[in-house]
Image: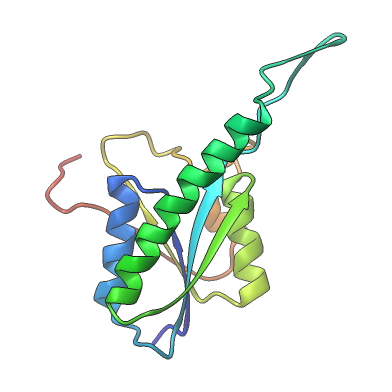
Length: 151
């Protein structure tokens, strides 16, 4: 049985499938479930001496607040199922953040959602530098997908 599980969650239907898979595994209250939400880093575009597309502090805070609400909703679902949940709200590229948490907490299983409707190179799978999740981490990965959706 897995004792340390990381669930990547961003509020999308695909990531809700990841929460459901975690519950179906029924790891019990002795397992540690780490629920992760990642806020994309602020885009900064440099063109010569000019900087463009820099979000305001209010916009950054609004994004963090919205993701915090999503994270707490996911936490409630897992705790209502009797699981022991630690939440993590991080800023960065999802693949790198997941890899860092896997190493830091000794994660044994990562659960991510996947939509057959989207391209394979989705946010949880590839970072901005084409870092593939399964190549960056040294633990098992469970891909949650809706069995009713066809490819």
